[in-house]
Length: 164
Image 1: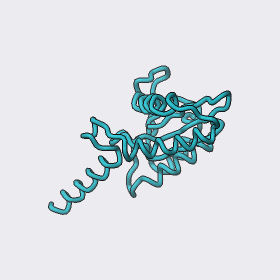
Image 2: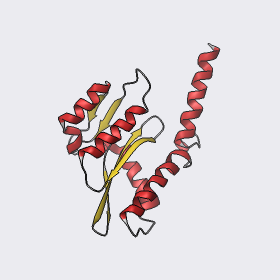
Image 3: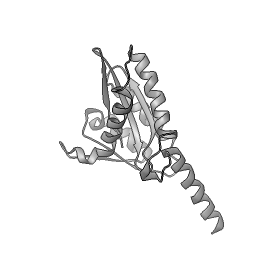
Image 4: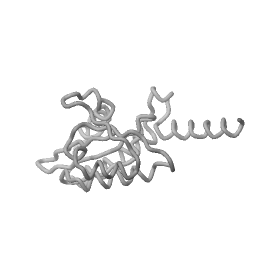
């Protein structure tokens, strides 16, 4: 799942474009930019593609934002064999998990801290995403962080295949 959120710091803006894995709610790739440009989305997707194993072709869900409607975005997904899914216009429920991540990020970091520059905010966002993925425990994941949950279940999957 993907979307873009905006941070406004004294009239200067920073845009965050992440990809969220719905399996464990891990941010698998992200990019930031001072303007909402397609290069930010393209570069984020290229990072996400590097996380895929051979033969994996997941569904990528987004809202109907301008970057996701661009033919270049569709071609990018098509070349990697991903299926694009966009929510109906005006229906935020289809994108609820991504909006939930943005709400948590903003309430736990952006609204609680005071940033003196966009560069400082950008550095804090890098740190927060690392914290969110590796250290922030989620009850829905059995009290594990997204990365801990993925590693535990991938090793359990490997063990079950080995014993079969």
